[in-house]
Length: 314
Picture 1 (tube, rainbow, N blue to C red):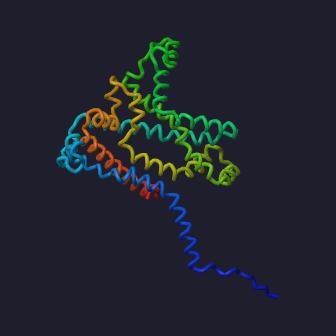
Picture 2 (picture 1 turned 90 degrees about the vertical axis):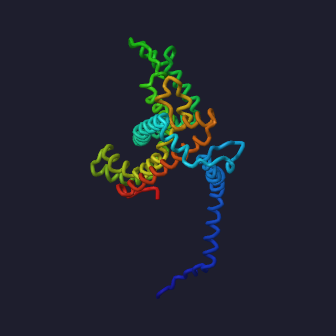
Picture 3 (picture 1 turned 60 degrees about the vertical axis):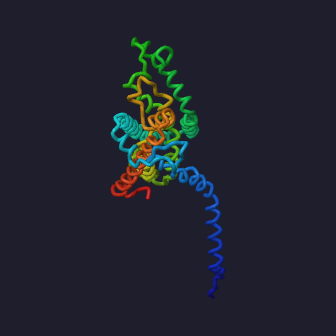
């Protein structure tokens, strides 16, 4: 005897639409604070870019200051100091990408290989902690460690029969110290996304590879790394978008007059011209060109990534 299965009728189309709209409304409500803050602090101030094309005076305001067109852009493009700080910015960013970008990937893979779960959690937690220290504290730690009189590093050098080195005033050491400080501070925090990606890789893949005789190195090379590639590409593209910028706090708290030729970057140069010398139009023009170059770099890198790997930001 055939028994007909009773099925509940599908909800009316109007009811489905109402549910769909309510769901969307809830999501948009959650995103509303982000949109509002972004609009207020990111988009509204964009009108201030007109300062770059004026001889801006705070007393005359945005719309009454004399218009000079590309005068300030032409000035800094022919200024030797500008090209020096541009070179320093690119060199530091290159070091940051080579060491600071790859180190969290390696750290995440190595930490994932720790078999003792308690020790793994402790290692990850300890690696996060420096991120929450301000750059003032971090620079103070490095100054103390590298001090020629009482620093731990120089004490070890003298113990082995060497002479103390004034690390923070030596041009040859400054960039390495700056990159090392950034690496120590951010390696654990930057690895968080990689930990999440590794945790999401199907464990059956590792089991199948182990049955087939693949060791840990082969499993990392053929399973872990391919699983991390989309995140690596995404973060690399975002990193390339800010290649013309170096964090102000890191450089400003560690630089000094003796290493200014090697440590002066775009952010510190803009600070010195804008706040110390009140050259608002010139610094706005520099910031405008800096943002434009970063945008062009991001678009170009995204196109190359889509051609080579098939992945991109959009």
